Image (cartoon, rainbow, N blue to C red; front, side, top):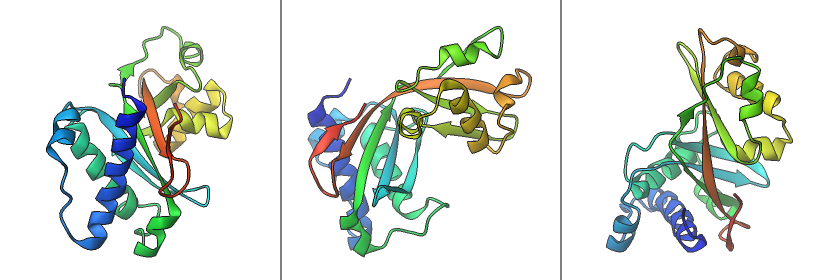
Length: 197
C-alpha cells in the first residue's frame, strides 16, 4: 500500500513527465524516487479537463519499475491516446492529473458465467476482458463515476474490447480478470493531491 505522500510524489512525477516533453528536456528522476518506486507495478495515468476525460494510458501488468511506468504512461496519455489530439502546452495548466497504481490482475474463476456478477465489487475492482483477438480494461473508478452495477460493468468492459456486450458470458472465447488500484489525483489543476480510492 502506498501512502498519500508517495501518491503525491507519483502524481507530481506524472505532471513533470508531461512538462518535460514540452520543454524537450529529458525528465530527471531523483535517485531516492528511483529507489522508492523501483518495484514493477501496473499503473495508469488519466488526464481530465473541465471534468471530461482528456487522455488515459497505462500498463495493466507490472512490466517495468513504477517510476518508469508512470513517466511513460503520463507522456502517452498526454500525446498518444488515439481518442484525443495531443495535449497542447496551453492546456497543461488546465488538466487534472490522476494516477492509478494497480495490483496484479487475477483471473476470475467461476463455474457459471452469472457468477461473474457476484465476484465483481463496484468501487473496489477494475476489470480486464481478454477475447481471442482483443482485450479491454476499465479502472475501478469508472464504474463508480458512471453509477454502474456489476453486470453493466461487465458489459461495458466487453464493449471497450470491441466485443459484443454479453461476451463475458462466453467461456470459450473470453477470460475475465479483476484487479484493485490506489488512485491519487490533483483536486484541481496543479492543486492539492488527494487519494480517491
